[in-house]
Length: 99
Image 1 (cartoon, rainbow, N blue to C red):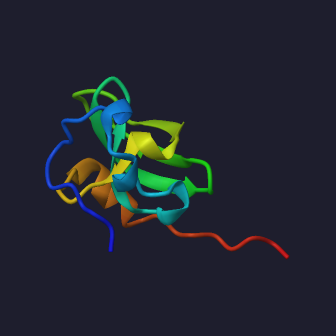
Image 2 (image 1 turned 180 degrees about the vertical axis):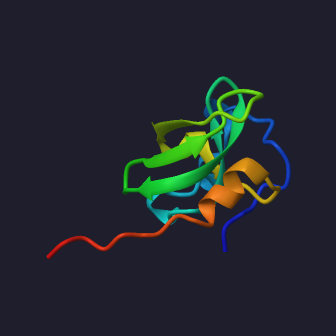
């Protein structure tokens, strides 16, 4: 069970306890997360690999979004809501690779 953060994290990625950092591959598309980009921002996982995750997030105090790739220390699970992002996450569909 992931450790969900109910409010915005206060510890910067370099000061996080490595034992509390979930591996990048533990995230799944549509997971709500916090990402660290000039402060902690609400985001939604788009894709994950063993080394990093791709996240759609709100880079500022507006409704616009950005997409970026983050390593595990810069991401943590999110429990509180971000309506603009979370509603978008409901529409994500995981695609199956072509064979």
